[in-house]
Image 1: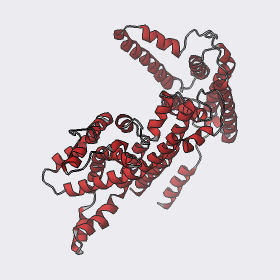
Image 2: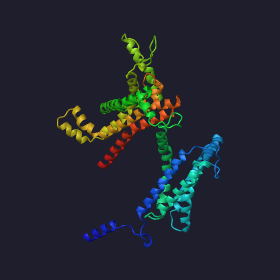
Image 3: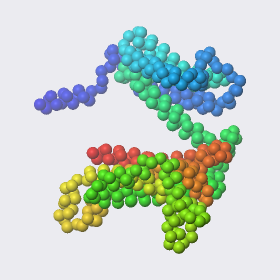
Image 4: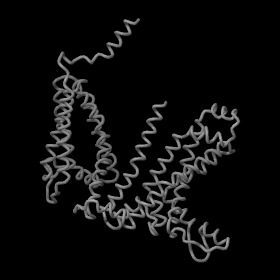
Length: 446
């Protein structure tokens, strides 16, 4: 038995057999070549995007681009647009599936298929993205280097030629979407934040100085931090209270639906509802809050214009009203997952309901509480709708999300808007990292 176990362990620890009796390729050399290639591609991309556009430049020999393709699609009739797009999508997917299936196979024909596609696909993609003559000097080298790197790394892969090629084709669609929809806009926004409102003159940190010194930028930061601190706390506490009390209440499902409904309502509708709640006018009041004030002999108040901080908290309560339903649903599900044996053991020890809640329930749903807190905080940091509809940012009630859009659309100040967007990104990133780490720890415990 011991000899068999030893033989099995040696077989598992042994390196994979060499292909054709040859020495396996050096990973160090491959990584060095690929790293140098990526550095060259990054440098060429930087020069490509920083090169001044030529307004009179004509398309290259390909004769088409994404712009011309979308213009052609736009000129078609509405009935033809959908089937044409679906047909082109099916053709692209079919080509990828054919390459994924046949290209990794062994043989001279498949070797040339991989070689040609490694250079043809990047070249066509880059020429379609940037088809103008003043960019050819960058586009062709980028495509050639990218294709050469793919073929070189695939040929030297220890798993065999075709492995990395197939893996790259699998990941390429998702990677391209992430690159074009997330990474490139983020980098472009960061770069834009160091230029003036026209985007032509470099101003350094001036936009960030404006954000912390100008009243509009300063109060947008202060109010955003207030939202990020108080909104998740209020929503989580109220949602936890609802979840705890409704567990033993009759008709708990109906009550939970009623509490969850505000979360399902569009933010603009929530804003309109609460705008009527805070409504102020001379004479008869239609706003519930001012109607109560007048009923008790007081004078109506302009709640959304009272500064400092009163109007901010009035807006914040509308947001909490909507987020409470989300917190309640998540925490209620977490409470039900707490083992009943723990509650019974605590009850046998003579603890009361409050002690069982604080010492058993809350520690048992800690992960859910963290998720609710971080999720509501992220939603508060990128808030826009409530401020835009209820106050329009007046009386120093603005927040970063609203002020970013306001600076771009109303004042055409792209530098200020980009700086505010970067600040939102800086505030949100630590929360996302913390949330991901908590989820990983939870998986490790399981």
